[in-house]
Image (cartoon, rainbow, N blue to C red; front, top):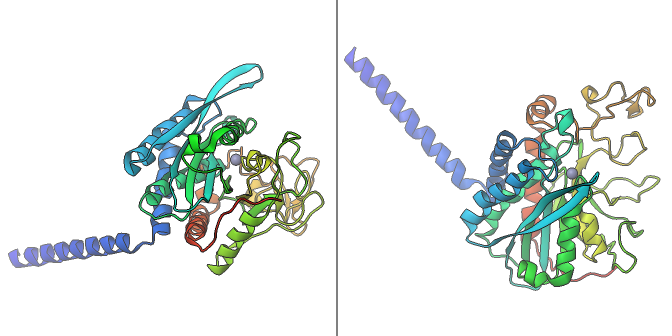
Length: 371
Ligand SMILES: [Zn+2]
C-alpha cells in the first residue's frame, strides 16, 4: 500500500512539474503579438464583468477610461497618461466624458495615432458593447504594455475616445487639440497617420477602409480634408505579406472600393488632414436595410427574423427587424457571441493584433501626406 501510494504521489508530482514547465515554455515562446492578443482577451473579460455597457457620459464609461488606463498604462509603462475632458449635450442634457491617451516616443518625425472609442450604446437592448468597441479598447490597453518595451521608428499614440456613439465628440475634441498644438498634447509632431479601431471583431469579414474621395460633410469648409488611401494600402500590404485575412469591400452605389463613410472616429482626423485607415469586421456583401453599406454585419440566420441566404438579404424587407446586426443589440454580449460564433472573436482579435504589430515593425516611413 505504502509503495503504491508513493508511486502515485511521485507520478502526480512529475506530471505537475512537466505541465508547469510546458506552461512556462508556452508563455515564454509566445510572440509579442500573441502575448498582447492573449492579454487583450483577458482584459475584455474584465471590461465585461466590471463595466458592462458604457453609455457616453456615464460613470461606467469614465471608469473604463480612467481606471483601466491607470491599471494597464500608468502602472506598467512609466510614461505619462494624459486626459482631456469632453463635454457634450444630448437632448438638452449636458454630459461629461473624456479622451485618455499615452504616447510612446519614436526615432523619426513620424507619428502614428491608433484610436478606439470606449463608450457603447444599445444598453436598453442588452448590449455590453463587446465587439463595439470593448475588444478594441482591450487591445489598446494591452498594446501599451508591449510598446513600452519596444524601440519604435515613429512615435505612437494610443488613444481611447469618449462619446463616439452620440456624435464623435471625443475624437472631434482630440483632433481640435492636435491642430492647436500636437507637441503640447502628445509630445510628438502633428500625426502623420491614424488607424481607427471600431468593431474589429464579430462581423463576417475583416476589412480595412480609407475615407471617401469626396470630402466628408462634417468637415468645415476650411478644413484640409485628407482622402489618402496610403494607410489603408500599407496595412493591406502588411496583411498580404503575412497571409492575414483582410480585404477591401467591393464598390457599391454610394462608396467606391475600400472607402467608407464618416460615422466613426477616423472622420475628424481625415477632416484635420491626417491620412487614416479604419479596421472593421462586418459584411459588405449583404443587401441590408439601406443597401450595400456594411451595416449588416453577418449572415448568421439567428440574427435575422428571416434570411434569404441566396440573395443575402431579408426574406421580407418590410417586416425584417434584425438585419444581421450585432452592434447596438442584445447580440453584442460575450456570452451570446461565444455561443453564436465559437472562437471567432479570438481569431479576429489575433489577426488584428498581428496586423498592427507587423505594421509597426514594417519598413515604412510615415510622412505628411497630401491628397
Ligand atoms: Zn463603434
